[in-house]
Length: 192
Image (cartoon, rainbow, N blue to C red; front, side, top):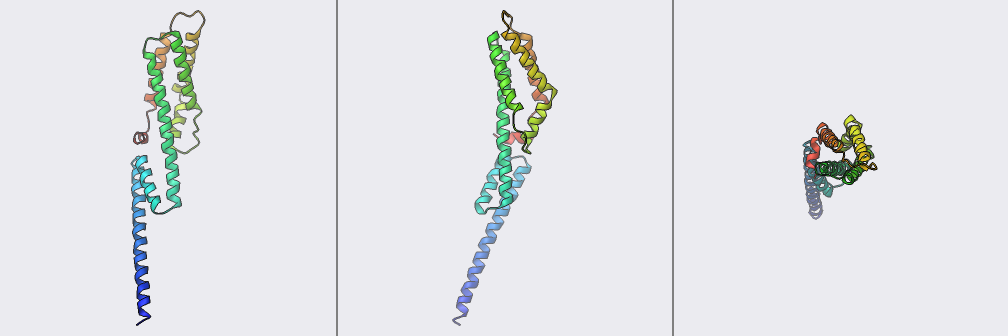
């Protein structure tokens, strides 16, 4: 009878530990499933949040890898959205009454922003990298650069009293066409 009690206690402890572990595994698996659903629905920030909750329960190489890839994607989407937003803001400034100096300055800023796009590291296998690559290869992107450079030269020309209105109108139109041609992919909308 005395040997049965310790064995019975040991069995109860093993059963309790097993049930705790299996509950944690179920919770972990449920969280991973939820995260994948968020990711499939292109809600990357929600997916990251749920993956991180799963990793709090237990460390998992695949989940950690998915989290790292997703963080890269989200970071790149945020960066690309910021660059494109700045370009749109800069081109919208051509709508106002401008002096030659204004045009020169705006063109310089625009060329700097376009240069950020051109030099953006697109080596990662992400939607943002693909978006930038497609944008940079487009004829419209190259045309926009040429138009900005031309307007910059015209507005900074010595003795030039005339503001290059036609040049700025072309820039506005080409920039609008570029972003109509290349709207943000659906996955960009879930990232702030």
